[in-house]
Image (tube, rainbow, N blue to C red):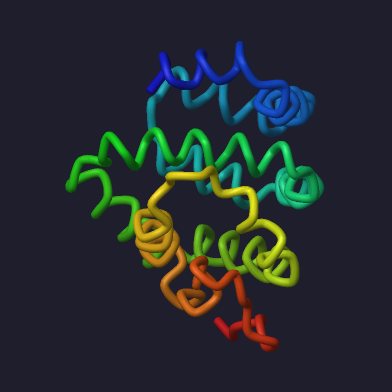
Length: 162
């Protein structure tokens, strides 16, 4: 995974833009440095997801088409190789059962939902949208209807009650 991240960091301006925006957030960096010591990915993710400045930054970055193109390109590579079943199950469990992560996903999905028809146009040619749809449904099961990426249509009502 580190090799993949470095490859895209060196190759894509949008990846460097996302990284640059996040590393300028002191509390994000504090959590990242703590993670490098304790390796507790769940605590790192909960901490990052709970930071309002991270949420704002990600929503701002989500307005950039190049960020989406890079995200879909990286996702396409990862999903083509396959995420090991135990990792996939743990991610789905963590996002579905953890209140902080659920709130983070809800907040982000509601923010991007109006732009989904535009966002799906950045999926790279040849990428199987079924993989992406399954992954999105795993981490955001109550928003599954929004991820009908074959049509790119998002329903008018996007805010789900938690």
